[in-house]
Length: 239
Image 1 (tube, rainbow, N blue to C red):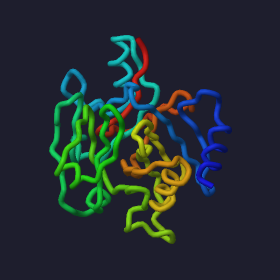
Image 2 (cartoon, one colour):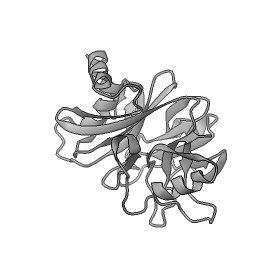
Image 3 (cartoon, rainbow, N blue to C red):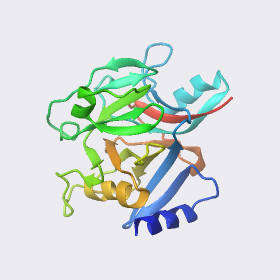
Image 4 (cartoon, rainbow, N blue to C red):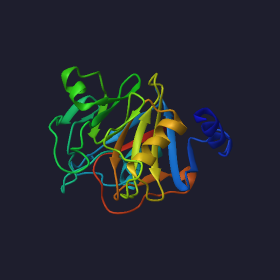
């Protein structure tokens, strides 16, 4: 069934599309995909030392070197000053340390995890990451985990009444593919996690955020304009 659902989703998209708008159990969901080796980066602060805050400012900075964002989305929870709540690594430099304690809110709903961009993609449970950090050129911590080695987070309930716009990232078992998804309709954690696992085939997936979630994808006509956000992940293209 998972293979069939994924095939139907891809067949409904334009040839060669990197971003796809689909539905799952009646909810509209959009996602973009990237392959290991493509130029997927995390962005936080610009050359002036201030947070980018949005997609247009990143695109403007990239334009100076003939590059642009193919797609992007907010990539983890952040403080009022837009700084990361948990681990943040950008171009090999750690900007904020990992947080392994439990706590209030979605970030503290353990297990949470880290999205790591290295030679391949991975989503690693935070305490496992802290015990044996993998080599990550970029990394961002958030929570909760959505899918953990093929299983849904144990706190998720199929009959939950907590519906929100949500976004997150999932990775394939071999780490060669990453999917960045956002629900365009409010969904529960359970439904969003099952989309990653059962439709996209993600072995591990991580929640990025909820009501503040935004996606930039010119291919889908999405500007992602709105109030400032913290860490951002995006696929960079160009010369």
